[in-house]
Image 1 (cartoon, helix red, strand yellow):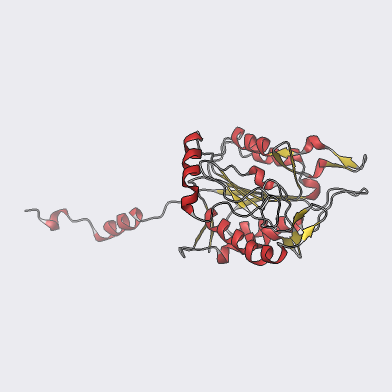
Image 2 (image 1 turned 90 degrees about the vertical axis):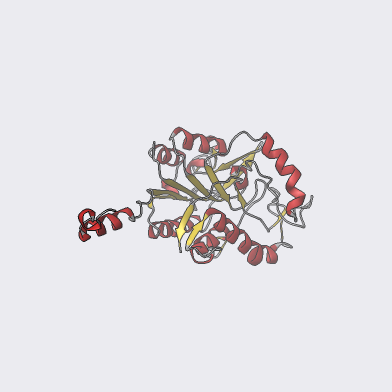
Length: 302
């Protein structure tokens, strides 16, 4: 029988060890790269927007309040070289990187692009197409910087081309909407309908990427701004308050996607699904897309 008195720890030491062992580990560092471009140029026909720079300012404030170290560039600062160099400056960073972009998007030959400030040249009153940033170039830059944990939010037209389906089936078509030709309704209304295609895709897919993308719309469709923000960003900004589906006070990428897409469907698409935009020759409804991956990241605390 052991004599407890002889071997007992002093009370003060015991309490120190107890509370030391229960100390929560320091959360990983989190940084954000935030870009918004409304003013592309001053010359005639410059493709200027209204609120993309306001989108970026609001997202910067939200992320800072959530503990992110934010780099913000808007309008003239948001050039192609600045965006790519900001990524490369994070070389070897092991924490979470959030990349947010609001501005024009472009698509050509099955590739989607974001449009930095210098895609427009005032001197020739025309485009510098070599200043586009493709999905391939963006992802390659993240890879070259050795960044392992990246979440990308894109409020731009044709941004669905940045979303990799991974080993999943993307049930949302690249041009969404029941009035589109061909029909752009969600493909699978029942999970069992997608089982065989999903298994086939899984068997053919080599590996998951480490980048999660939530895009405002599909690879073939425009998205819209209205009032003070882009429609996608408006609901992204609300997500810390309304996305917590499991009520654990932590907002993950999948919870954000569900809230944003459901909100756009309810409050925008139900109203604009019958509005035909003669400029884009599409109906004005659209639907966000999410990278198919088993990963998800905590972005906000409620």
